[in-house]
Image (tube, rainbow, N blue to C red; front, side):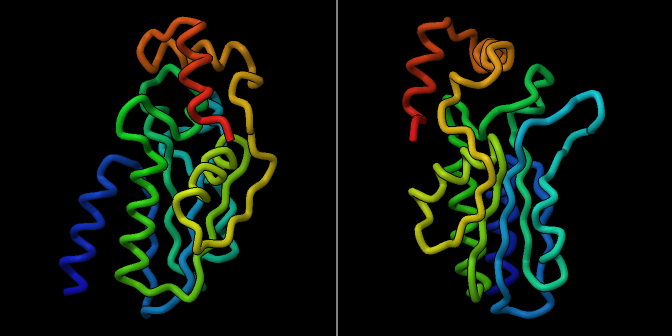
Length: 171
């Protein structure tokens, strides 16, 4: 039964580049991390946030890489897309992991754009603890060049379209 559930989880996670560390035993804490902006000059994909390094030996950890970064055109995607919302999919994965593992606690961390994603996720998964560092709360206030790159990458959104698109994610 557990093997079938793990296979189902892996199929769900196929949309993401993930780093998943399974615990030796059941009923251990579950920790999830969402990264911030990505520096293409100094890092290679997939990128993962370092927040969980202290928990790696004591918990099941799962790190998600924003799928929009693989477009090659952006360094930040805020875990948002026009369709197949990554936050909904990540939330489903976390809920599925929880149904398999019965974690003693859930900790979800993120900084900057990953902090924005955590704030959105907190509306979906309300039985977790969140450690959110300097979250972005208004995406239009981020660097204009990054917002423009994002708009072009997502589907050629105009300046007006990007404002209405981002407004649906305002917290």
